[in-house]
Amino acid sequence: MPESDRNPARGRVGVMLPRDLPVRDVLPFARRAEELGFDQMWVVEDLGWRGGLAQAGPALASTTRITVGIGIMPAGARNVCFAAMELATLAQLYPGRLIAGIGHGMPDWMHQAGAWPASPLTLIREYTTALRLLIRGEPGPADGRYVRCEGVVLTETPDIVPPVILGVRGPKSQAVAGEVADGLLLAEPAAPVYISSSLQHMNGAPHTSSPEVVTYDAAAVDDDEDTALARVRDGLTAIGEPAWAAHIDPLPFAAQFREHRAACADARTFARTMPADWVRQLSIAGTPAQAREAIRARHAAGATSVVLTPTGPDPLASLDSLARALDPRP
Image 1: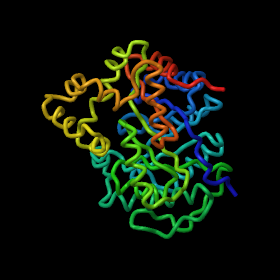
Image 2: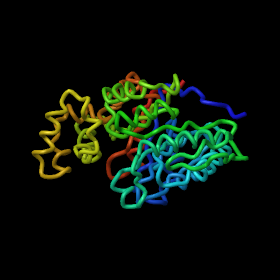
Image 3: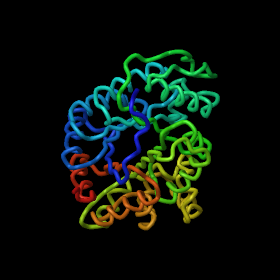
Image 4: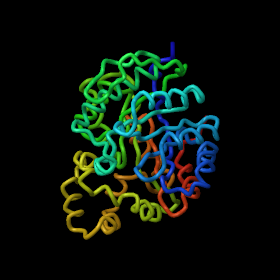
């Protein structure tokens, strides 16, 4: 039988592989992240860019220790049986080094791809339930509205089952994560108050007592705080749009935040003119000591892994600067 539901390690720090990184730099970035001491590297699967599984395999093969997370694979994009086979194979080859993130996908992208369901909640509930069973070598559940895999059994299953976490924003979707998944992935910005409120939604129907809680945040580190804050603003241009409302609602300045976005002609102006205190709360930016404190605040709020998204023109150089925020390893 596979090892089941391992308890997540606390206090992990990861880094995001930028989706627009030149292909020649993808594997050097993964190796450098491991050399610098990051615990995890996360890859994204945004429509029109690179595939999540296709990035995860070579990243795992080119490193020896670092955990690779896929955040996220849209539930509507793949048949669950074949997704389970892919993930189980990676988990067999690289035991204990994989985390699988599943989500709805961005509605505009999924509509464009013809893969947005009439009931996203039903799909993600059925999909996650089936995926976790299949990876463990158990028979697929009874056919549902969207997912049909009754009786399917994988013959090749990993000794260490990778956590399956949901990258979702809304309270109903986060409650589903509590019911059927191994944890939650919170996209940027993941301020501590947003982490706490999300865990309250998830804990309404707890599936596991020790969930993985992975957070993303735009990040910049420099000896001069103002330089870091200026650099990270480019990573905050999208967060004033309606799709990010769930991230902003718990903040004490939510109303002023929306007024500021409404007063700005475009997203770039919005981010460039945002008060510095908001930038500090909505990113991990500043001196190495300030960045370490921001990471600790997210861990204290319930994050098990805090993932830093590099900002600036040179991701490899940014990676080295972000590593200065890591606590020294024993």
